[in-house]
Image (cartoon, rainbow, N blue to C red; front, top):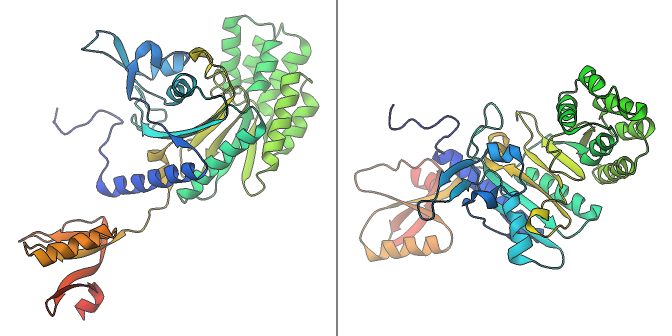
Length: 387
């Protein structure tokens, strides 16, 4: 095998792609800071039992595992940063009030999450801990939408669901654990005949509601229909009210609902959302409420957040203009080197053309040139020089 062939779904990031990704990364972190989120940097690997505590089977299967040469213990390369941030909130910070945290770093997946996805996403995310009200849910969703705007992504659609609806119905369905697993799979695939078969011995109102659930998707009118046809269980009524409240604050965004959406059903504990844009094969961002995330670390408290892959986001985001740059000759002359240093100190990009070589940098737009005029080094427009 050739030495330059990389593993499947792993790729080098070339200059034009890296510039685009890095510009988005900086914009997202700056935006999160404007909201009051503090940056944390969890480690890329941890002891396996710590990394997978409370994460479930899905994350376990996505985690690369290796042996620590120092201790002989099993280590894992993180596949998701959210559990690590929950650990930081619970153990290292342990603040009594609201904590806003954000993060950005690579994660590794044993398998791609979608047919054309990378196994090395650059994950950005934000979390609010300590507030159980809908204000936190709305802030996280607003931040996620602002992230799309910061990346200059257009035609955004938000798809919403609430884990409590399925949880309330399944809890009343009188099914054993294996049957509940089959029901979750049937709901996820919207297989109504399978749902009917699994729930044939469940109480009639619950069985009927579960069979209707896959049909409850569409615009905001779905919430009214759900309130009419689903049983008035506490979890369902509260979930529908919360979804309606959040949607009411998103008048400028296209919002749809899928009340049988089971993605992350073992993880989310309330309202959840996915953000889609044309051209992306899967959701660009996912988030919602997951109040149980800190329980395994001995500190259960309200939590809501979202995450996205900046690499996937960059593939549909508008490419930014090239950064303006100044071209300069290379010389040992002190006056030239001093002029270049002053320009760089002001934030200008100055590229020196090495002797005998034309500049091969293609990630900058040379609109000016440093030339010597009457014994002084001055910056002139390249167009003016050409004249």
